[in-house]
Image (cartoon, rainbow over all chains, first blue to last red; front, top):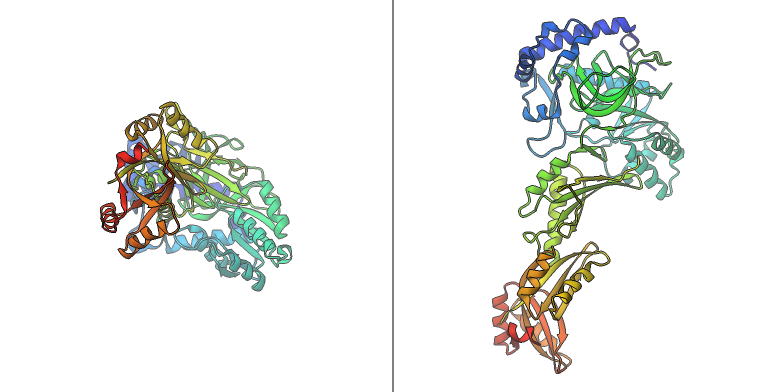
Length: 433
Length: 143
């Protein structure tokens, strides 16, 4: 089902001329309203007037996560705060998270995009959606919520956690669709089975899953355990939140990028060179309709591939393959984005801790686990058990408070964390997704 | 009246203790008393040895995290109720024991209890006032 037939099936040449018109406007706007873009374009010796075709986009410099941090919290907003009606933020220690803002129209756009996603998943106003994305600063919960309301479906604003209660609601309210991370879908399936509930006989028929990397194998597992169709959704808070691209229920073969609102490019992450469609590289997005927080050529660090073949569903958008990895060291733990540098910042905030640490990421059953290994130096060594346990507790609490992720802590003997050429290997990712 | 103890941080894994005993053995250091406190992940090995400074230095050189701690050694008659009389004296004065361990003297007449108190000086005063025999470090190191 197609929510916005007119825009989602525009002939390519009409879509591209719409993109060009919107791109020109957004480049003018950021150049004249956001200091960062003006100085960045002046430095690159490029003017908004130089954008005469879509391929001229590559003349503009990239924007990356560091630029967002440097302009924390509101430095990249293109409208006065009086026009901003909503703020979201990624997890991060103070000053290092990224903050995004939305005008009233941005919220309307985002709601429509999410409504398009739900429609692509086959939902209508007759569906009941169990929304288990976290509500709060994270864009997942509210993004999905507004989209479902826009479609007219009934939303259960479940948010994350409290698995037993979630299973109760799934049984009692009989939702027909669920939104959550793929690993949480599996957690629900397994917890329900343990409680002796036949999770295959619930009314659920479709899952709109995303916010973390997953695989076709996980899809099969979720589909068989919950007896649903599992669909992949993509988004990131910087660009909008969930709803940047979505698989269609008809083909389930790549996520349609809503190109009337975003321009997607693939680049070589090392050289920054734009790659032709079909080649694997880092995704770069330009928002062409956002008002409060427009982004031009934002490097997502997500590795994927763009497919231009037409899709049977009738949408004329390009599709992106499922994200296969990252071009930086960002970890996604149970849907929360975490950089090793953020964990280091938290550890360094604890008096006496030395910068010898290692992060071990694994997936136990269906849940991601993060273990922080810290070497015990003389400064923090207490000869009483409770002293060391207090330290473990403090690290766990600080990581949870600042980064929103639950971690285990393992205290290690000095010099036991592997070092390569004097430099420690910071992250060991054992997950087989 | 205080005894110096060394504490060593150990991970809970096979071979962790053996590493320490080898270092101590190679340095020809004699262990007088020991206790091992453990959790599922790590342990703290507490030792009273004949040569505290050498033991500390050599373990540190070998890369261990080592700490010197002051503890109190109290002589207890090796008979029923011996320990209880000490605990009662401490309890009456509201003194908290962080941890303790015991060993028996070579002659077999007395047991020695090693206590870790906070604050240590007040605890020593209470024990001495109550008539218990608090042993000086030198005596314990050379037992």
